[in-house]
Image (cartoon, rainbow, N blue to C red; front, side):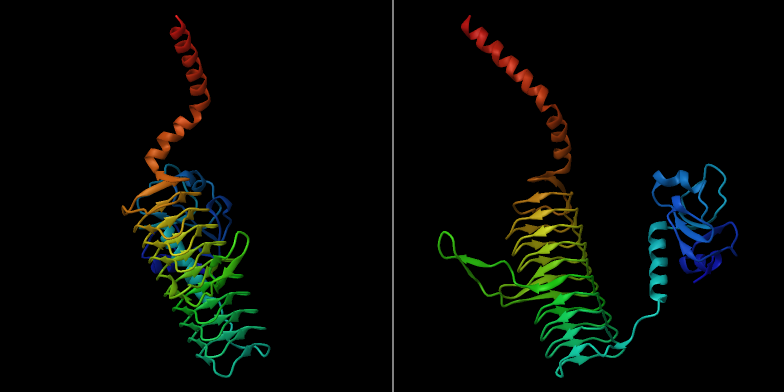
Length: 345
């Protein structure tokens, strides 16, 4: 697809500086720009690239003031990163959608399939399932009995959704993810034996949730494991049984949350964050990468880091001390020797 600067500026309510008729047909990083490409500049660290980029059009913030000549046509917008994301969504939506039900798909007779649905090869849809209008279900997906998918969901190849789960509208589930597998519930019977506790609940994903690749979300022992509206989970995340994740919370890869923990809304977790079970995380909590949380976070909108995690400023002050520990140890040993010498005198 090909767009002019004038068309793009009109869509974004942007201001053009340069040639309004110049055309682009691809996108590129600003440092890898080429003729016919659209790029954006949001981070000031990358400003030097805008003076040498070969991209034809660059989105910039309205506050941007160049310090040298720029060959590319600029489109000034309120937020160049958000504007670029809007364009990517437009291009993605313009792609042709697959439609129809493949001959090799197995759909039980009691399942209800909405209109304008795509179901790919070797997919299984179980008894009493409901697949909403406009859903796209790609090859080798398994959807267990009594599971419901809302309208306009995308379920990518190899996803497994166990029985009785509920998926809201406009959800995206990426390849290899498992939703509704048994929670990790075992009762000790002796020093070396454990009895499996049946996991009789389900998983509920509310609307506009996106789940990355190879994520595991366990079903509840009783009740539901709940992923609230607007949550975004990266790849390789583990959500334990009976966990609740609040609205619009985002988590980076390899995060793990133990059973029955309640995470507030608008939280942000870095990669490899680990949460113990049966704790509560306040709304707006930000946890740095590899943060380990052993107890409740009660104060809203706090930023913590470390394992066990502590408040960010406290961690940074502590990290300065960590680096000095070897020389501090030498000084302490020397002082102890001096004290012992003084005692003998």
